[in-house]
Figure 1 (tube, rainbow, N blue to C red):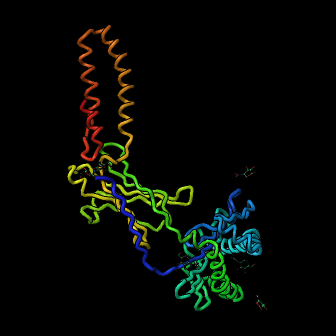
Figure 2 (figure 1 turned 45 degrees about the vertical axis):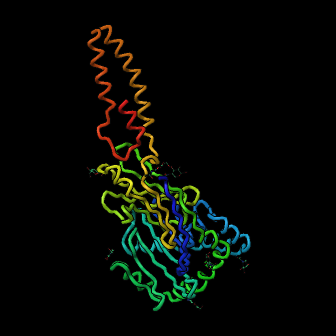
Figure 3 (figure 1 turned 180 degrees about the horizontal axis):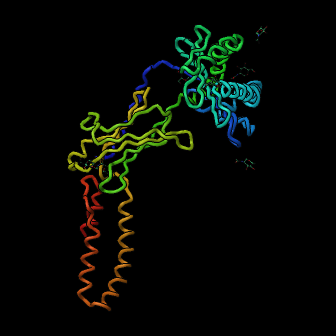
Length: 360
Ligand SMILES: *[C@@H]1O[C@H](CO)[C@@H](O)[C@H](O)[C@H]1NC(C)=O
Ligand SMILES: *[C@@H]1O[C@H](CO)[C@@H](O)[C@H](O)[C@H]1NC(C)=O
Ligand SMILES: *[C@@H]1O[C@H](CO)[C@@H](O)[C@H](O)[C@H]1NC(C)=O
Ligand SMILES: *[C@@H]1O[C@H](CO)[C@@H](O)[C@H](O)[C@H]1NC(C)=O
Ligand SMILES: *[C@@H]1O[C@H](CO)[C@@H](O)[C@H](O)[C@H]1NC(C)=O
Ligand SMILES: *[C@@H]1O[C@H](CO)[C@@H](O)[C@H](O)[C@H]1NC(C)=O
Ligand SMILES: *[C@@H]1O[C@H](CO)[C@@H](O)[C@H](O)[C@H]1NC(C)=O
């Protein structure tokens, strides 16, 4: 009876789909607010960050640095786009949109999501470019018809004026269908092995207090395409289960947890549960059996601390009581103290040592 970690490495050949997505945000109206920020994301990982107001252009991965070291023109292209071309284009568009909507005052924000996807096995490519204004979808470029599609009625006027600018649409097409996929491939030349790596998590069982749910916590994993769930006798359970979000760690790996309400379980029932971690596109699973002796908790320490500080208080109280009321008072406080240490709810899945401590 031990904590069982099953690592099953059964790679399935899945289509390898890659993407390069640029997120640009331009804002106007508020003083001291960054006016243009851009991020380039490769296969879901932040690759380049730029902030035009503070003249920052940063490769965010070692493999991006390698690409820039090899091809200094690419670095210059990013700097020029980020510090000059895009900020002035965004500024001009925000001014024109404000006029169109009769907005003289206030803070306005224009965003784009643009990029391309490349399916490695079939060679299939696709591009996209979408604008959002003040947080709402606004216009989208249709690469088949080379025209803009309005995503809300208010965007119609802008659509008509942007459709008239054929040169700009043509430039967008060339960028999205030719330049972007080539750039994506050069990023993958250096970054693919890092982007395609899988790092399994370390999994632990945590419980705050004896009546809290047991948390199955996985950390240090990569990529973030993963699921976690609890099973009973091998069947996925939904009741009493709370699934947390996938959160980034500082080192580029991820963490998540899934909680299970164990308050009504008998010890026999507990042993029928296990927690499963699985990467979405690999058939690699990590199974952690719900074993009460392996649950990490700090409630025992807390109780010990509480107990000693309560002891100190008790000593003082006992002295006072002894002076003021004599022996009868001692019995009263002793009783009170004992009552204080009886947990309101005793959990079946708690640490056995913890239980002993309560009863001694
Ligand atoms: C729980 O883990 C402990 C320590 O590894 C082990 O001795 C015990 O047999 C395990 N219990 C179960 C139910 O797996
Ligand atoms: C903007 O920044 C300048 C200089 O850093 C500062 O003096 C000013 O108070 C700031 N204004 C606002 C509205 O924060
Ligand atoms: C290095 O840069 C040259 C152009 O300067 C380019 O043709 C080549 O593909 C680059 N190699 C890598 C690995 O990015
Ligand atoms: C903006 O103001 C003009 C003139 O006052 C008006 O004709 C137009 O309908 C307004 N546009 C919007 C979007 O409110
Ligand atoms: C569009 O491009 C053509 C050829 O490159 C050029 O002659 C024309 O002046 C451009 N039109 C605009 C509005 O920029
Ligand atoms: C990236 O790595 C994966 C897995 O290692 C491999 O299957 C794929 O062919 C590689 N793609 C490129 C573009 O290097
Ligand atoms: C856990 O389940 C018990 C009974 O099934 C319920 O009373 C309790 O509220 C639940 N606790 C949480 C945190 O959901």
